[in-house]
Image 1 (cartoon, chains in turn yellow, purple):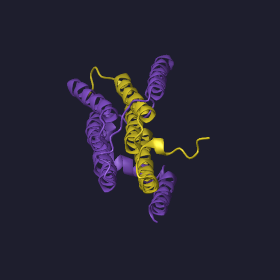
Image 2 (cartoon, chains in turn purple, cyan; image 1 turned 135 degrees about the vertical axis):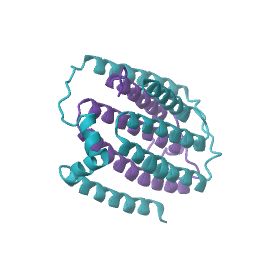
Image 3 (cartoon, rainbow over the protein chains, first blue to last red; image 1 turned 30 degrees about the vertical axis):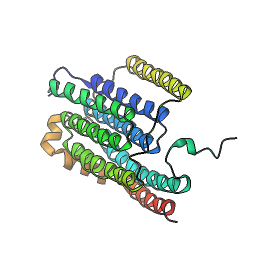
Image 4 (cartoon, rainbow over the protein chains, first blue to last red; image 1 turned 60 degrees about the vertical axis):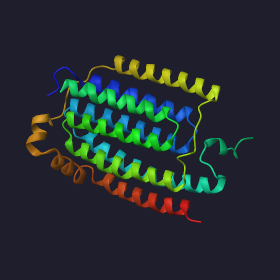
Length: 103
Length: 165
């Protein structure tokens, strides 16, 4: 089906999206945007799993993607609970407000 | 098919960049949805239609809707975020550039692996990819499947404990 596009191209796209997500985690201060960048990194890893699994003619990578989706859903529930508790405590969602461990 | 790959990759990379560049978190969430649709297109090109449907239903349909709900609930759409911290920006960009170079180096120096499995595209299309995933999920991977259900239960309880007061 894919004549010229091979697994390396998929891995290149996945690594670019992963790096963009990591950049978002490092430079943004809004908790929600950091969380969205984390989701981008999850999905880049998913794309890598599916591409390699298709190249090696295996199914294990596709099963792993489903488990990653489960972990992402659990993480979303927990992190949004934390976001609501944090907002209640500080009145904002910026990570600059999370400075109580600073010495 | 190759043209579709390039279209999807341009959309995915553009929307991923917009996620971290726009100021409004609600706009970020919408660009994440766009990126997920492009990734679902990749899964269809890779002959995994079930995962594409799961991507749209679970990610774009459940997780991102949950995030948008929280953004609206906390009235965060006006919480503008500025990227002005020079040290954070410079260290972030340099470390991510290093990370990218390392990934590319790793992919280039890793030895080539020949395909070993028996599940070629023809076999998957003959059985059906949903059926094949279901067979694996309930036979070989049944223990991780049960652990995943306990993980979801723990997450629900944890979210309740965090959010109640």
